[in-house]
Image (cartoon, rainbow, N blue to C red; front, side):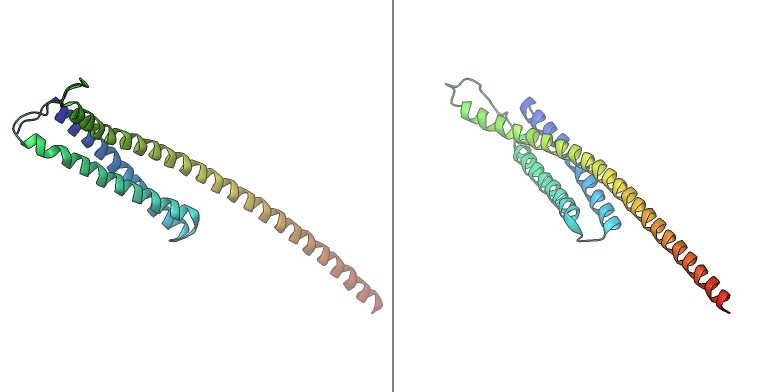
Length: 170
């Protein structure tokens, strides 16, 4: 096994990205299960979002493993990858290809980190919205109960007046 600096960097980038994607995947799965426990399965836009989040993280994980598989054979073969940043070199196109392949997991890693951040923000916003909706519902219920109590008091008063009139007639 012969791992040069380029292969080591490539493998390190992919493994770091895989660790982050697995963490995000576990978070997406937990979020989906928490939502299902809260709202029930197949319920509304949030259900679609949580399923989509989980699916995207699974696909990112598969892509990361595929990119890691590209470098594994060269790590086990003798010799090094020879790269050249000289545009006149015949190895320049190989260099561009390898550098591009090394950049893909970095871009995917960035996407995973940003999506995880957005999911946390969305969860906080959703929780705040649910609390506000609960408070509004409680306020409406209190108002309705007060109206019903006032109506009951008025009915009691009317009944008392009628009872007094009936007593006066007897």
